[in-house]
Length: 109
Image 1: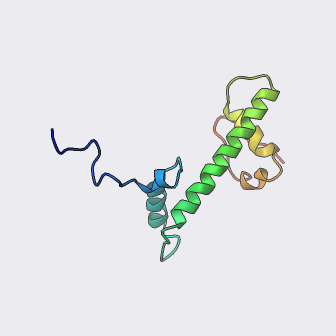
Image 2: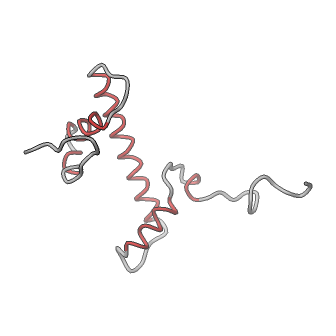
Image 3: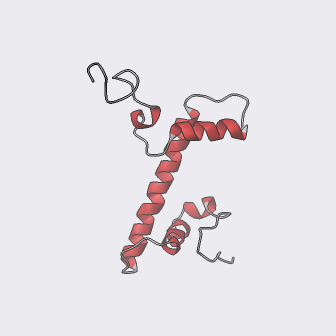
């Protein structure tokens, strides 16, 4: 079909998520922030910042879980390894104190 392009919209347009080079959806995060009514007004950079933080934390925990797997001679990441990684780091236990990773028994303090 002449005149049709493979993508919708103008040829140079790109959604916010790939433009910011992020893996998680910024539009989804913006919707969650708006529906949560956390503030009366929402900056356009707020979802970008929050998605970048979540992406960094996810990458960090996966990296630490990979090291735990190598140290334990395992080849697959399991919820148990993710929990061990999150709790063995110096800074992350405070962040994950109130969370429970599925299929892992909570640690008693």
